[in-house]
Image (cartoon, rainbow, N blue to C red; front, top):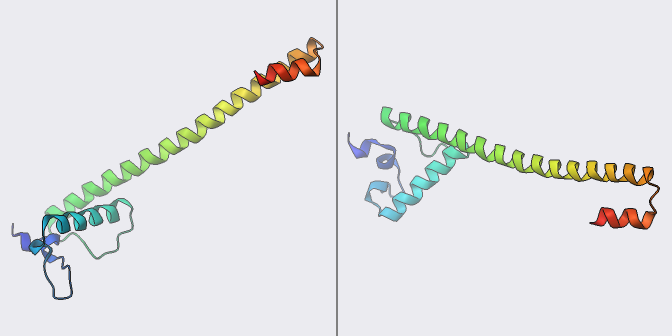
Length: 118
């Protein structure tokens, strides 16, 4: 397939209409990263789009990968928040048990505070 018929060939980088194919590797990499980030973040500005069947298939695969990455990130954040809640719940439950034992044993307040601090 002709590279000029791909999104890289259709992409112009300046007012004179210079194709991205005529640019150096850094410019090509930069625009490619921009494309991937717009797909991954679901922003999709529409300034770069798939035109050929191969590009459409590739973009669909990239979208699925982006959805999986988003899911992993969200599940990790939820896991961290939940584990923090579990630790706090564990501490709270043990303080309640300590209070119940202290009441049953008629411990002085000073000793109760010392036990909770440890």
